[in-house]
Image 1 (cartoon, rainbow, N blue to C red):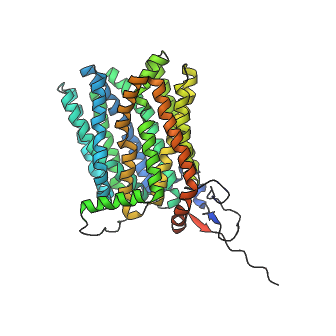
Image 2: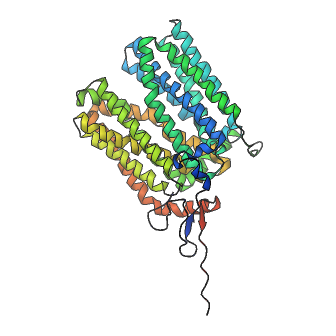
Image 3: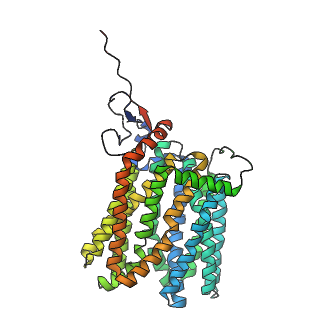
Length: 458
């Protein structure tokens, strides 16, 4: 996290020595010649395994999401009941993520991830069997959605914390997180398209079956990794004390607290745009499913563009400004969409919103991972999960209520305005936050003092 100005180096390339004590960035390693800068995290064997396994699994995950939505709508014909399934599937994340963070700081992260993948495989297999047999009911879908929410409550913070164990060089952490974001958004484009074809040709059960099989790729990747044993945590610390320590540390340290608050604001007010996009595409733009596809596709491509940009950056330095810039871009994109009435002008604004959203989310993740103490990483990443994913169901409910009261365009404008204002406030805080982060970056070798010029002799 840096602030604007000449004393905030933005590159890990060798720099000309400045005045005594002025921070300069760490030189980039010569190993970057073998793999392009944007893909340098793939030099790490463990991360390569994760990248391959996760890439397969995420496509299956998005196929299941689309198939569940279509199945609920086919069974009930109710948009309200469709929203309820999404809500109950996300609430466990808000409730259980703090507990998962405490356990992540005590248990083997790899073993926890293997366990969550096995349980998720069973959940998807149950969906496939019940659907194929024609026995699936709306009540069963609700229960299975809650089960998946509980799984994700443990899987998400542990997965975020495990990235550090897969990347041997701290300077490649931001690249690894950006590449993971690239995977998520690439799968978001490919998975739904495959699901649509398979549902039309065969039915939802095949999507669930393929998702169950896709978890085997992650399990195999985790089993093949060679991970160093983590230091043992203090013995006998009660769970609630660990929870209190995590909240006290995360919310008591201004750089972590401010990042989490801005992320929660953007998640609550901005990232629920998908809830009202069908209404906007149909009632405002006078389009149909194709118009909705163009809008959401533009967001996905914007997110991929943002992820590639972050992956190409040589250092974590400067991400504080990108957190603020991303929030502002996200807000401006939503505001622009709110005031347009044609698909041709709405698509570029959605691309801008998708780019800003990805810059903001991935930069928040990277900054938190970089500045957190290792023994509290799981708990801080659980707070990240709460701020990011835990706010979404409430944001969806809020967006739906606002859209009903004032219309979809004004709802988008209000959400975008909140994100824009939050980004501006955060940018104004950077000069206060940077002195608190600078010692951490020096201690971790991200910043080193420049050589002191010799004093001229007589």
